[in-house]
Length: 238
Ligand code: IPE
Ligand code: IPE
Ligand code: MG
Image (cartoon, rainbow, N blue to C red; front, side, top):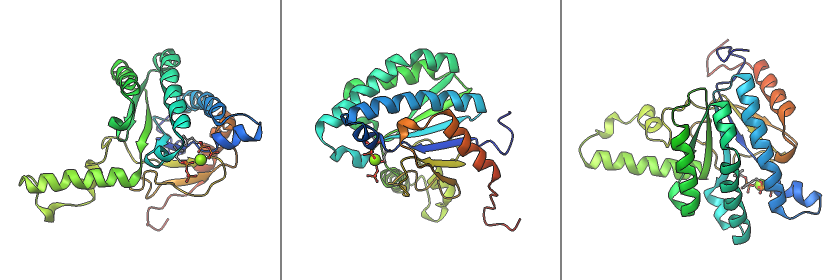
């Protein structure tokens, strides 16, 4: 399969949901669910590589998730660092570039340095990008974009009349990344939870009934196959 095939999405964005419920079902602490979810992350990266999907964005921690119990947040941050260390080989083998989307400065220093290090050493890889949405929300991203645009107007670098959709797209966290073609949410919840509100305008949506730790290669392939059967019209008549 080639990545130029229109039936293969160029960019897949996933709301990885249901780790806590997966653990609860097994009588385990929530963090065990997050650990099992990390395995699904590895599987998703490999499957994207196999299918020729260039961009994979994973919603890993929202700005709203900061209200969770401190122990869970610390567990998640620890897991993120552990994951980065453990997966270094995977990044090199798959030639995947790591990027972060969100208010990275909110994260603990040690997590920031682990992310910065991995972003630096994978910056030259161009076969695929893994984008982690961390301390991310669509509304926060749009607020940050509007603030930047307002600054440019105040400096006299931009005329308010010239502001259009392109100005906004270019002011988002990762302006060079194309909008997701396919958005997947696991766990059966049918909502966006503040994820990529601008970029998902014309994405195909797919809701999987399984919890994220159970979402593996065959599930991602099923989602991509369904995507291939969708007819995208973008408002046109076809
Ligand atoms: C998704 O799983 C991971 C994060 C939001 C960090 P959850 O932790 O939301 O698990 P559920 O939805 O409570 O089962
Ligand atoms: C969305 O899941 C955020 C992430 C997957 C990181 P949540 O579990 O936080 O969303 P809600 O609370 O069910 O809407
Ligand atoms: Mg959840």
